[in-house]
Image (cartoon, rainbow, N blue to C red; front, top):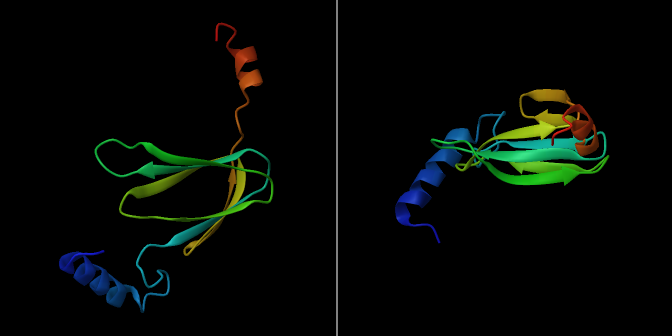
Length: 110
């Protein structure tokens, strides 16, 4: 249950953003991430003095996750090939997924 002040702030945010076509009514945009290969990792990064990974999801080829920026989640890190759709446009993440076997070959003392 929201207290009076939190409810008032939320209502003001909704009224402010209701006419902004880039932001949904709640004020926090969603992003859609569609994996284009197996093993794509999506990590939610926190706000604050130290940035930390708050949550990690691993997607298979073709899987979709819908994410939202919140007061606690400041950013998302995507590792692997994925299509990312935001209110601001679309982008293809083209990173490579590090494999433990390949890493061990490069760094034998590991």
